[in-house]
Image (tube, rainbow, N blue to C red):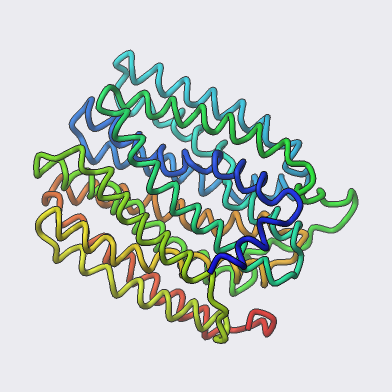
Amino acid sequence: MTASYRSALASPGGTALTSAALVLRLPHAMYPLAIVLFVSIRTGEYGMAGALSGVYALSGGLAGPWSGALVDRHGQTRVLLPALALHVAGVIAVLGLGLYGAPAWALIAPVAVMGATYLKAAALVRARWAHLLGGRPELAAAYSWESALDDAVFIVGPLIVTTLALADPALAIAAGCVLVTAGSVLLRAQRASDPPPRVKGEARGPSPIRLPVLRGVVVSMVGIGGVFGSIEVVMVAVADEKGHRGATGVLLMLLGVSSLAAALAYGSHSWAAPLPLRFAVQGVLFAAAQPLLLASGSLAVIALAGCVVGLGIAPVLITAYALVERTVPPVSLTEGFSWAGTGIFLGFAGGAASAGMVIDHAGARPGFAVCVACGVLIALASTWTWRVRPCAHAD
């Protein structure tokens, strides 16, 4: 099971690359939950807390393709530190306003800056792997490994946030900023894996979002992000409603553990079915698991349902990113990956805000209905992507 991963990581600079990206991506699993706790504990309003978490995700999603295109043009080395400086400024503004009692709406602008300037490690590291490994078979294992690390941060991140939040949720936001700083510096130091910037005068070509397959992937990612955003807000509310706020981290951790196990198992297997078909099947199966959350009652049953849902996360994400790599020209690959990330962030924004409104009006558990609705979108979009099948090289 581990041979394919060892082969990928044995590539020159592979271990250092994935380690730096791990540090950079950890706040991805911390910031949204930290924002929800930072606002809800101070105001008691889940709707506003979810809306601000949605603003963070929305700004990151909208800025993603632009920053991805900027990276393709100038290279990661030149873009990482300026983006980091703006991100730190946004975090300082959020903490300053929040700690000094500013109204929640005053956090909208600095939260948006936080999201827009946090370069997405998922896009950066996958572009680096594509440059490092080219068309070698180890690339599939590298993508699976990165998806496993995506899941790992969703195991560790919520636990860090909920632990720090027992003292003050502001500490969780500050810790995320420290990790973004360290990860940006470490990744920038990995020059060997940095894809070269586009040659001056080289045509960029049309935006990759014009490719039908990428559009289908992005819409599917909107649904997946909607599940992520809604489930995070609902888990906080359910645990709080049942008098066990500290259980939020455990509930989200179990979701990540099951997805991590699925990622490692999926990446160790050689699949004969074409990528578009696998994407459609995985999208439908992931969607079919969502009603289990809505039907759950106690925290133990909700945790079990979350584990079942988690099993479907990694396979659909791994296949989605593989479709992007097979579809988008190398000259725009970071932008292509960023479009996929944009789908997740846009969905997260809508899911978090929608779940917060449902919770405020109907209670905690009905918020899982947002997950079910997002599942329908995933099933439809992934099936449409398979039916399009415009590129034989994705098979």
